[in-house]
Picture 1 (tube, helix red, strand yellow):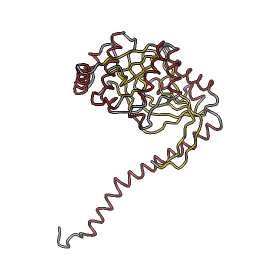
Picture 2: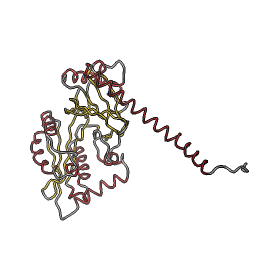
Picture 3: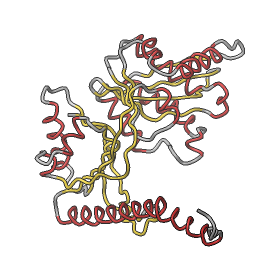
Picture 4: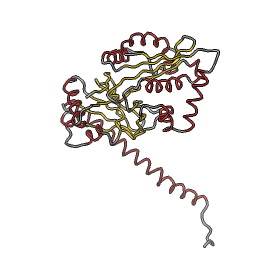
Length: 332
């Protein structure tokens, strides 16, 4: 099986509603994508992959699974009481349901365009035409193969400092991102793309090929070219490149975190859940039990507040109105 993980010393947050009353940093691995496998016994392969993670990473207290699609093989394995995964982990669903966005891909751009909304389809074509038809500028897209990963890193490093994401400290070219790119390049699964205008990079995107899935990692653009929607233009150009080179994938995975762009441009949106998986040891049991108890109390408090708002509040308001305006003694 294959999976994409990142390591960090991240916080476990104990909260009642929006109020975080305790935060404890613990070693965590975050699984952004996967595990996936080409084996016929797909469910067994996924469980064995997570078992290997547990055995290979004894120093990690928590494995965090982001946006597991409900009904997927991984979700079913997590929820099954006799799962091999549960021999190694205490499992805690975390947060509310969200959406997981993907593109079903049959290798043809036109088929994809017909599967999304008419307005989005028209906008993608309009943005592309506006940029490439402008005689005052010269626009081009370059594809970076795995052996060109270092060149890609050099080319897009200056651009990332200009992006609005960087200005808001949302994303940066950090050592973890560089390691991911270099690792994917060694595995021959990296593809990078940069859009140039007048020989200067204005937008970038990169992805990893995992089995039949292209995992679409971070993207960014120079905000001075925002009026040309260069990020959207590059997105469409990447799809055209996938068709031109017959990239052997059937799905484009856009990872967690919902954005309007993902909602408008994807044609496969599934409900998903986040999970915390705690190692089956004393520390993991304590973390699991305390976090589960806090979450349950928070949810019960939220349900009570909702009940009060829906039923007690209106009744109280009606009593107040009647007190201020008592009914007439002569009314029927």
